[in-house]
Length: 211
Image (cartoon, rainbow, N blue to C red; front, top):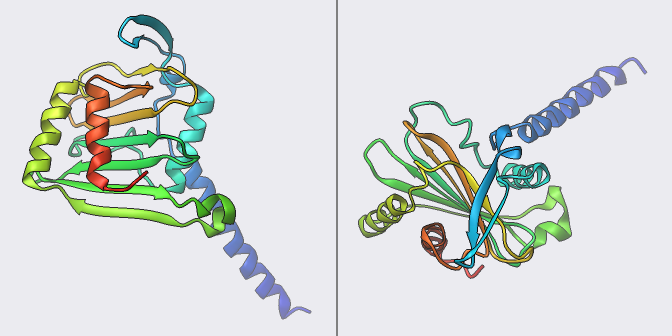
């Protein structure tokens, strides 16, 4: 009986470590808490003005869980002085979003990481999650087009904002990090035009998935 105690104790420590690792991952702070109380104005369909909370708490929890499941880092907690990074969270007719993250290197080149959960994830549960992933550098032409669209969007200098349309419409969220400007968050729901939609559509097209 006494021989079994060390084995049980060892498995207990391993289980605790796994739980601690999962909990730590879920405690990653992906979004500034002040976004849950900040109000921003937006224009829907080119003429209808509205205002609302930039990022509701429940939405922040859900997005944080999705980013954690995909193994995504926090751009909000990115180290000060780190190179630029831009992340698209694209949601259209699917339970899980597609993530496209672009990170600038010290040499000025950009690397793309695209991730999404397979539809099998909902059937298999967390332990059987299937991850689809693409990692590659941008070509010179892609980099030039991306940097031009990023500059036109003015997302890195503008205050964080959220704009919501129809509940089940296409949702485009773009996070940016700049070593001088810091973190920014921009959400557009039903964004059929405008610089955020143009940038998001371009980033989506870089992946080549039929999503």
